[in-house]
Length: 585
Image (cartoon, rainbow, N blue to C red):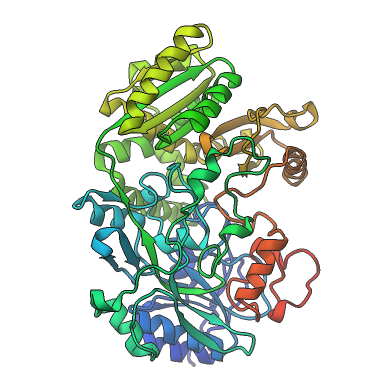
């Protein structure tokens, strides 16, 4: 008698469907090798970089833009939910399944769909779904230009289109959120039909197969490229960030001003390509490291620089001393990988961590990669230069100010004048090139330090809450001092962010036994009282509710609710039918 085969189970141990009629059609499009159905194979795609995990019918890995179109057509024909995923580097679970759905879910991975083409003499670029910020940065280096983001999400392998679809922010003050009004995308219309819309400004014909193949091959000439008919970056942001007396934030994900087709779509469209600006690399740059006893000192510096400087800073990154300390120890491996090997090795580092953690799960050893890395780096001496250690000892508040070209001398003159007049308020230090890179890397390493701290501490601490907030541009009381009824539940706080934009990342390690949901509710109510917006740049994912403007935008983009339903705690039901009120979670 033939042995009965056990059914495939999901990550919760429940049987999964493996004979859906769409699977054979999808395999015929991409090949069996690129159709993943076993939970062990789909796990790296189903589980978010920091948050979220769910089940899928399959993960599909198309190898061409036309295969992506055919895959989407098949999913729509079989009434399947589509979740698009590029690099899976999101921080709020916005490109992974989460909870239960009313239809089977197919996750389409765009990692194989690489491709970047520079146009308009390198002033713009066409990027395909799998192209990353790092790859664009590498492409632009030879012509002295840069992408929208050059450190941060670029170092973890984030995709260009993922940034556009989530209005991702970044450290660079001149450039604002990732944004374009020119894209090639598909949507499921109100009749349940998939339609392809070309707003790239490139004449590629009308038929999907030839259009997509021409785009992927770069089979078009300068004569086919029309001048940009819309913004290909946020051209208004510099004026907006300078408006220091405005009582609204400079940028945030619920801002209706920057929701346009692909921009802010968050998986509600299938984006095949975007047309974006590139930026001239400065001829001269200088980093000034500023320490202050009181946050009011940094408030005065920020307001003066934004109001009076002819040259905006390139960036201005804030860290509190407590964040500095935790990042120095628990972000050391990230720092060392980038410093010694280069940022291009960070994605490989995270892939190694994921493999170790999957092995750890089989052995019932939670957070194995974090514990191994921490044991190794704890044996090493400090990696930070003496001037930073001195600043850490002297000052509670730290600002890493980067200026370029004419702004270098402008800042040098102002900082000398200011601290000569206020010698007891703080100090500044003009970094060498190497020291500036070290300070910037330390700030970048802070972004993952809270996760490492939380993973290593285990049962010694409670949950981790990570908030991404946009403060009003006229906010003077920007440094958070929580009421005692909230503060009593928190074991450690990490405050860091993009200071001149007033975008702050605030990570809270709770005490054991604290009610994370209640603390988060209290924190958000406190922020509401300050006129803050959230999230600022990580998008709503499955962590934050989409406010009315964003929820309406999602409904307009995806009237049948077939693409990434449930994000922003909206309903997951077809045609936006009302759910139980819990966002389908």
